[in-house]
Length: 580
Image 1 (cartoon, helix red, strand yellow):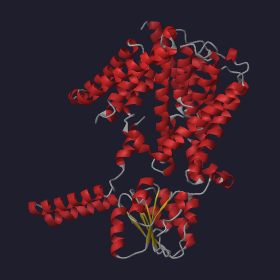
Image 2 (image 1 turned 120 degrees about the horizontal axis):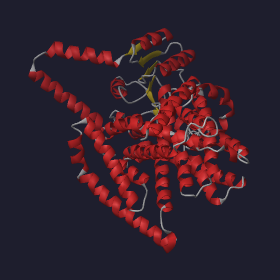
Image 3 (image 1 turned 90 degrees about the vertical axis):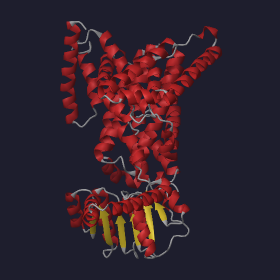
Image 4 (image 1 turned 60 degrees about the vertical axis):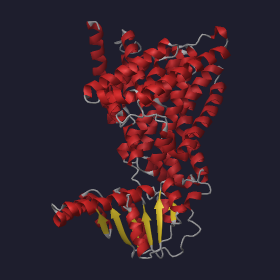
């Protein structure tokens, strides 16, 4: 890179740091800072960006690595893991947003092709931003958080498929007719994917294990594999983006996929920064005529209309208005995929350049607004709760089993983790109990076993108030979230002050806080585990035979839990926490 280009890149990075520092003060996602940096340095203002060729190259690398990392987490088993509600909500939101967005685009006078691109771009929400915000709030493990992350996965899959299709079709030679060309594309794609499936199944695992002996070598191999397939697909008439995505998919079943993703992520983030800066720099404010009203209407549709669509779908599926509202807020912005899609459309001359300006402005407005909406979601819900009853249809999930006992003596919130052992003890004591859990799989399993259960979220004040505590003697919460347990204790004590409350905590300060709120006893699994281990050592010490007996008993216990379907769901969460 010439010295001038290096100096220019240094200025860009320095300016980005300064702008993003200001953006962080207002608790906004850094993507807004990147776009604003591009606008400030563009010819429209300071005119400090002259060598756009290098920026375009870096931006292309960023998109390629982004799709590679998306592919890493598109294991076919993902669809099964995200569940029915996430699949229906994700696909339903995409369908309705596309239809409404297309209609609005036509109403504003955009032609059919531009309207199609705009409509599709409006459907996608930012997985990176939402996952970060939910993680910062500690809500990734809550019911609405799990559902939201689930339908964001569905959106990512659909977005990847659309990008693949558009980029392939854009580079196709239509002189032989659309039908013939489509058959050729499908034929080549089938052969390539079949070949790569065989390689990923039988050859790649051995190669990866070899390279995994060195962290640097694993990173080098991953990038090399990404670039090799990106170039191969480019040569065969597809696009680099498709090749990068498929490269990621071929590694998605590998035991090292999370490690590869974590190694590649810093590179991806840096080059994506350049992509968004370039996006801001390419915005033309000379062609804003006629775009102001569409920007306002489309932004309001995303901020208000998208959440309403999700609330209607989740209400129809039987979820509470609170979970529908909180999940709905996560789709109140457009995605980085939306901007990439429009950039692709402009590059192949499907889309007018001014549509790029339109979508970038919508992105800045919706991302900024939705970030505050998600951060202050609980306050918003409290304010709007009385107006949201319309979105809570017949709530199938809140009805008890037909065989539920009328006189409930104990309520168990959260079945997984230690709940399995608690129920075994309760059954021995002939206690009449009710299990509350927010995992549909757990509820389905309990119903099959004839266990009294109810589907609900312990973090939902409306749900907690619906339960009858008049004859309840004890509540047990296995949920290790201090705010949830404090809410349970406060709410239930108001209903029946004589109820005993056993809750779980992982921190000493949280345990002391829960005791101050009125908890009868706080279980700390880590400390209990340490005491149990110490007791094992004290009683058995160097007795090999005793440990062999203990070992066999433990294996039998673990196999029993696995057979019963009570395995800890950490495998599912591993995907969500590592996907960005």
